[in-house]
Image (cartoon, protein in one colour):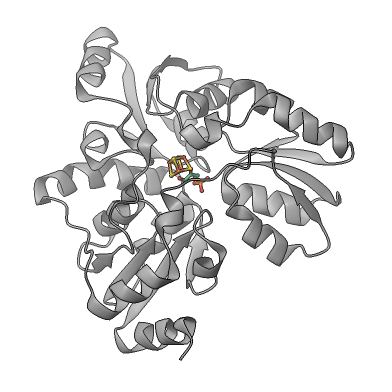
Length: 301
Ligand code: 13P
Ligand code: SF4
């Protein structure tokens, strides 16, 4: 029997649902029930009825699904799939900022560890960060961990004063403006679409900036036929599936998140079969981290 057929069969018999981020390999996205950006996936996680959730993504995503659906068994194809940026802040600096500014909100990108989330006032994703920061009553925003997303949001919300943290996504940080412009020279008609985790100079040169879902939506609706895509190359699976008549180019050094690619079909089959690789988070940590996540879902409505 084909591996995908076996996965489908087990999904039914185990009362399981498969969730996947757009950066995991295309063949894994093809067997998923829900594919999306971090905001969509967390919204869905809260509403699921199945007994088991298999989350194909990185640790902070599996953990968020567990926090929002604590009675479910959450499994991940590879528990080593982690986001390096999720660790790029610390509680000492958060405390220092709280001591320095009276009117401060600690805004935590969902790409962060549960440990960091518990010290935050609210979580955000790239799809809802602008809306949520605008809605906060505080004047000062300490945005962790991503400095690139923070600068992008600060530009959209000039009424707030941002304090930056020096975290970044190594995959998006690697996308160099020179390589983007090389593609633009080769394909002058192509529009440049970028994820806000990219460097400032790339965002400034882009025609559209948005989360992975927003990039997909923009490419589908746009009258243009060619695009230079500045985000992880996994999005090409969906871009091509939804827009077979359009062409998508990536910078020469194609951005690949090695952690997302740890999610293979074979590992997915294995966890479905044996129900191992369960996500466990100590209860106290879970209680602390779920608060800013729930606040995000409430403010983003
Ligand atoms: P979104 O899919 O929420 O835009 O996030 C991108 C990302 O880097 C996830 O790791
Ligand atoms: Fe983390 Fe970047 Fe990979 Fe997303 S693409 S999981 S932010 S390292």
